Amino acid sequence: MRAVIALAAALGSLLLGGCLLRLGGQQPLRARGWEEDAGAAAVTPKVVRALRSPSPSPPQAGNRTTVNKNGIYQFEQASKCKAIQDNILSSSIKKKRYAEDYYLHIVRKLQNCTWIRRPEESTKFRSELASCCDAVHNFIASQNNTPLGSNMSYEVDSKKTILITEDIFKMLPVSSPLSAYPFKTCAVVGNGGILKNSSCGAEIDRSDFVFRCNLPPTTGSISKDVGNKTNLVTVNPSIIAQKYNKLNEKKTEFLENIAVYGDAFLLLPAFSFRSNTATSFKVYHTLQEFKATQRAIFFHPTYLKSLAQFWRTKDKMPISHHYYDNQLPKPGFHAMPKEYNQILQLHSKGILKLQFGKCESD
Image 1: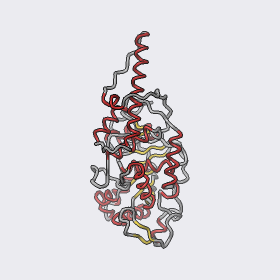
Image 2: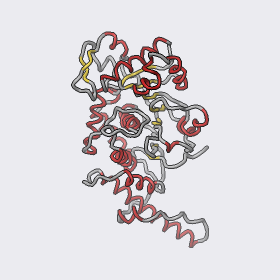
Image 3: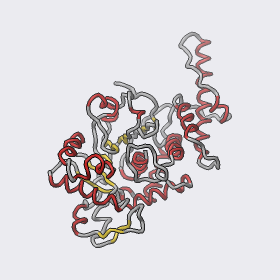
Image 4: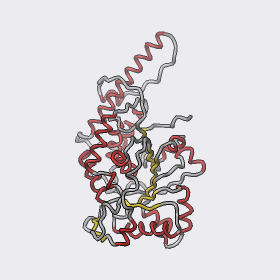
């Protein structure tokens, strides 16, 4: 899920156009945004009562009495939704550390609430990200932000550095290859089980730019749920090591498997840990050797550090932004309740929209 949140966070300042997010992380959340929806009534009921009371069943169409009941239902539902939203927006400053079950409870309640896009919040958030991290120029290591002959500090192994030799410098694009893409819609697709039977594939594929995580399968029957369009996919070096023996062998298998991504970028954290570097570079050289259509690019460690600091100011708690795997969260690298909270905050502010349940079919 960290990969998904890190990419989603970058979009505010990375892409010049608006973004549509769909998030299927390791936990049951999926997000989407920039869609117009009808607003809910702005009333303020008791937060706890709204959270604890069951959601009423929608009334059936009928006579005037039914119409009146429908109005009452809509008012009550809007009141509950406003209470949930207020609770989410205030939770980041509460001293109590909620457990994961609490956020799952909130998610279930939000399924019946109407999302409202708030352009002013989106603009503000985009500006904050641009000020702290400048993803347009710093998201990807390039020749413009990584001088030849400089010593680059690793993101996590911060006491260790790597000399940017001529060979490494030539591996980097002159400038960020993503800075010239002003898209209206984008999709960030995780690998969580929430995507199964979601029927979101067609909607994801309609996005202008699609991000995926950790070389996931996209072909066959699963494509109806996750789509198959891919413009960028993250790659954890541990996958290359475990599945492809660090490309010391199984190069053909690797190339055949990534062929489904077309000419997508493969994004690797080469400069997060020193142990990641050799494997990440091996991916780059393998693609070059076989003239593959895919292109390897690397996270810039300074950007990841800045992004981590940005989230600390939001939650007073460090959150790792460099781990991308399909394993359960590892202690020290994930803080799932806090990650839930950040996504719910963005949803409640109208910056992105969480998608619950199935996507609408054409």
